[in-house]
Length: 498
Image 1 (spheres, rainbow, N blue to C red):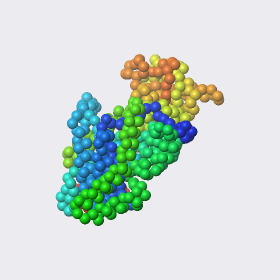
Image 2: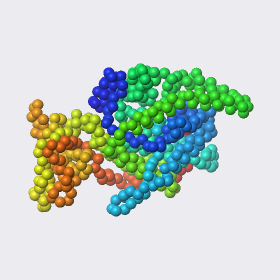
Image 3: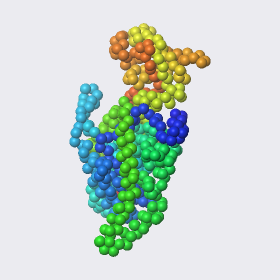
Image 4: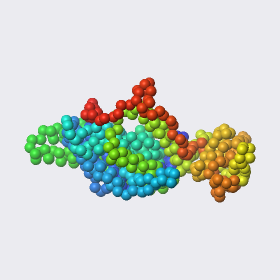
């Protein structure tokens, strides 16, 4: 937790209401998200009990597993869910757009992408496990499943894996999205309860945040937001309903018992359904940050690429990445985290304030500028303007460090000197390179003018060449040797907990 977020939590506790910790939205909320609220049976690994799913706030679909410990009923649930999710995905395969592929070439991608919203990070874990337990299943042979089930598993696995990409919004936990923009007066663990967090952010009339959060702890009024059920509900209600359904004799009695199970389970899920759409409305009310659309474009690319992969006969994701694939993935995620941090800071002065406090960034006014300065020390003359920035921030950056200004893409600012006197603002001299055109005269607006307010940081979202790894076929024996070509087999679908 950052210093400013800690301060905001203290202010929220004092004011009795959550405090905004951003000025803009840092997540994309689509026009047609699919809300998915899973419920799993306690004590059984990934044994789905029910789910409420849909893209229309007024028309959710309820799916209920009459006996979560029964394999056939679990996969019947997966088949029902698959028909809903795959039909939703199919709606995004129509419209396409042409985008640059570099070097004057164009490529096609889908004009929009699906978005799956779950209440909390545990919902993402449920999606991951459900994908893992279904993507290797087969519609033929021993224990056949509906043909849509393995396709659902591959898509859920893709969404869960992509959710690890910093800034991705294809699969989004709503509590994470809310906590990114508001600081409540409770702990981070308590923020995982959607009802309690919404109580701090948008309390009902007549209640403040603490009172609304306390009321949210009553499982009778606000059942847990999934996937875990309340132990009291399991012991006092659910066990009796499952037993009654199992003992029901005759078709009429079984239907009556199942209808009662559906009614009770729906009561567990409907409060969270309402909270989810209220949260969507809150997130949509925030103005989007400048880089949000760029990250959503990357999500559209990922959706398009994986759809093409499956259409071309792509196999299910392996249980474990091979050594080279794992190293590449780790490097990609680390780079994505650095870019995401930079983009959020460049978009939002409240986020940037954290880096200004730590000395990684500074902001101030330009008090001197040499926009036409030319460096003639090398074999050819180069445009190298210098500016002097006066700042009250702690300027802890060493001379020679290259900084960037988020509003001037492609331009680096090398620290020439830092002059700081006790009790006086610091003066930082910067030499600029790049982003000013190709001539020895800077293009208009590319060099800050005297009096302009600027902010420079060690953060950067500029392109970085990917790290080099050996081909997979040359994986050394110390890392397992070359990976074996994945050929899905029946035993791949076997899990101790599925």
